[in-house]
Image 1 (cartoon, rainbow, N blue to C red):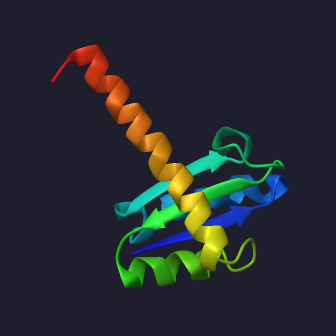
Image 2 (image 1 turned 120 degrees about the vertical axis):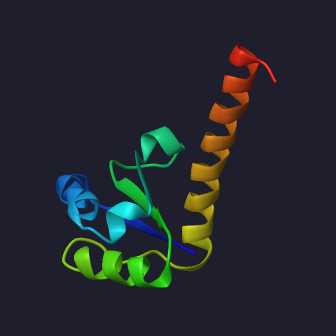
Amino acid sequence: MYRVFRLPAAQAPRADILRKDDLVSRQSVTERDAKSLGLPGDDRYVVVEGTDAALARAIDLLKDVARPMDGADAERVYRRFRAQDEEAASGMGLIFGP
């Protein structure tokens, strides 16, 4: 399970609250800016992957900053995160070999 959040640039530093929370910090929390994902704007995107309880906690922690994205938009951003991770992993394979 995962949730994608879009934080306005001015609110991006508030995403640190996820790393300070005991439950959410034990999940996979990844942040990237819109430009690094090839998206327009200055927003910051955060993907939290983990348990249902942790995702609910992340939603609660960010309720004053950002709501989770839904539908096709969330899926599109999530795919960009995964594509970058796969590219990085394949690049490491080229450096270190199989």
